[in-house]
Amino acid sequence: MTQLSTDAGGINYDGRWFGLVADPDAPVDHRDRPFGQYHQDGALVWAEFYPGGRLRSGRLVGLGRTDGSIDAGYCLLMADGELVAGEVHSVPVRLPDGRIRLADHWRRLDGSTGVSYIEELPETPGRHAPAPATTRSTASG
Image 1: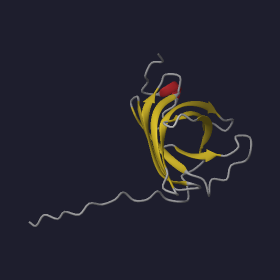
Image 2: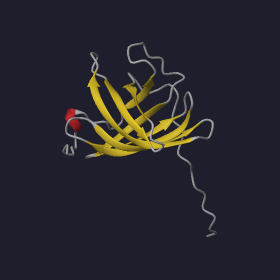
Image 3: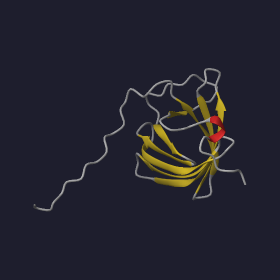
Image 4: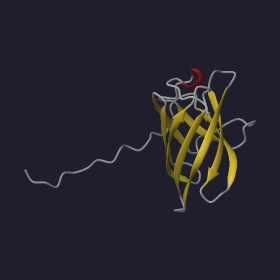
């Protein structure tokens, strides 16, 4: 078993933004693709994914490993209402410019498998993430 890490393979994922790469060998245009922000606290790694393409919203939570990989579970709500969930083993590669590309080896609860690629965005996306929902107090005081 790979050991847990507070700084996975020299990578701290906290605050990094990633976007889906349709073809890992093609230039990336993230404007119409899902994107998300990763967070890290010790070995705990989590992310929120925001709308783009077929994705409406998503979440990921897992553990960073000493080799820089992440083992996590995820849940996605697609724009058509489909709910997709599963587990993923993400393997990082440093790009020549220092950014990170993750090869996400996923297995969905329905048994399907595959590999997707996400790439660290060079800057915070121009589209801003939705503001957190606020809660109103109904108690009179």
